[in-house]
Amino acid sequence: MIARFIHRRASGHLRAVPLAAALVLLHCAAAAGAANVVTHHNDTLRTGWNDAETLLTTAVVGGGSFGLLHQVPVDNHVDAQPLLVAGITINGSVHDAVYVATEGNSIYAVDASSGDVLLRTNLGAPVPMSKLPGGCNLDGPDVGINSTPVIDTAS
Image (cartoon, rainbow, N blue to C red):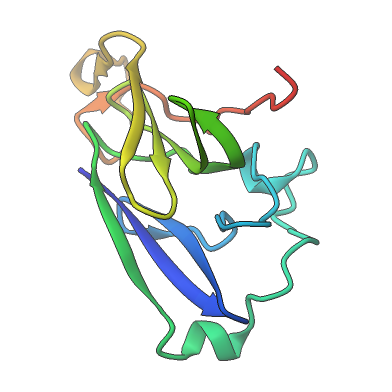
C-alpha cells in the first residue's frame, strides 16, 4: 500500500495534502501556518469545514500547481482519515507531521514537506478478514485501525 501526498501552491506557500490509498482527502492540508487537523472531518461536529483555509480555491485546484508530491509505502490499506499536526517536534526537529493509520494496525508520522517517515509504531497483529463473523465490506485482507483516531495536542 502507498500513502500519497499531493500539493498545491498558492501565494507562494507549499501545501501538502494526503492521498490515502487513492482517496483524495482535500480537507487535510499541511503546511507552515496551516491549522491542525486532529479529528475526523476537521472538527468535533464532523462537518469537514476548515474555517482557517483561505488559499484553496477552484483556480488553485484546477491549475498546474496541484499534483502528486510524495508516495509513502505503508503496511496495509488506509481507511482512516490522515491527520495533521503542524510544528511538532519529532526526533529533535520541528515538522509538519501527517499521521496515517493503517489496516495493518500501524500508525505512521510522515513529514508533510519531504515525505520522510518520521515514526512508525505497530499496535499488534490486525484481524484477518476471514476471521470476522458475517463478513465485512472493507477493501483489504485485514482489519486493524479502521476509524480515524483523534490527536490530543495538549498532551
